[in-house]
Length: 333
Image (cartoon, rainbow, N blue to C red; front, side):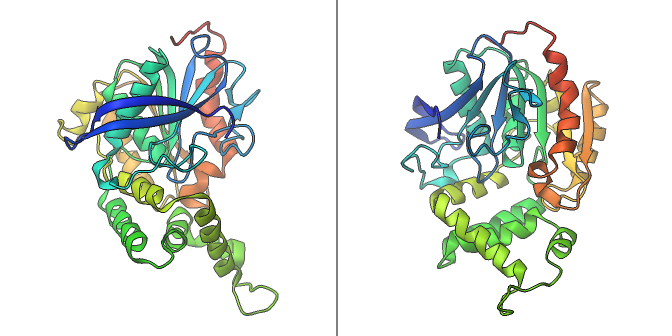
């Protein structure tokens, strides 16, 4: 939890009309000081946090010195979604999780950037839930982002996503061991049958009583229970179904036409959660109204989690975006 900093937000109006008198926004910065280099905002996924690089950094393969998002050239800013508990003592928790939407989170992040006096963002990138927040950030401030990079995500929650959010919510509210049990179900959404079958091949542990796949799932549930809080899981899961950049706005094409950023949609060919067919269709629609849109697809047996596994492919996709910027004296604030 190195260099974790906090911004105090007061009297924040939520999308549903309620007001939060106080919201702490925790964040970390990496690389160059704010105001001296182009800014890359990195949004975390459901169980992630702001620790994107360095010790225990969850995107170390992509972010750091001499990495694709090179901290020698860039300022990296990563906010924690309020309520994810990543504040040192798990005090930053929210019980009324149904009050919040992804749009609220995106507005909170922009409040944070305003506080930091960041007037222009070179790139906003995020995977899964973080990518959905990135979409919303681009709609809220369509002229302030140069590159929008949503990875393994979508601009809306499909019926499939909403259905699985409901199952997760039911587990989280009714199970005797909610975090661990919800994680069992979630892990099977994040991987594929082919990935699971290839890895474990029906093998058992040495005592022949437990299959290795069972042990793997139980271990994942146990690990998450030890580092995540129930209220955080409920909130992050709920946010997924609030994903819709067209809610109370006009149709998709009308909304996205306002976005000035280059849009780089990155899907995973075997993603069973945010299915690639939806991203391909969105890209085709985008091409009818915008020229600066690009589609990339990670090829992987691993499904949704490929954005955390297939670093070489993702690096090849991102390299032209971030490498070109090194040649320019670009200041974000």
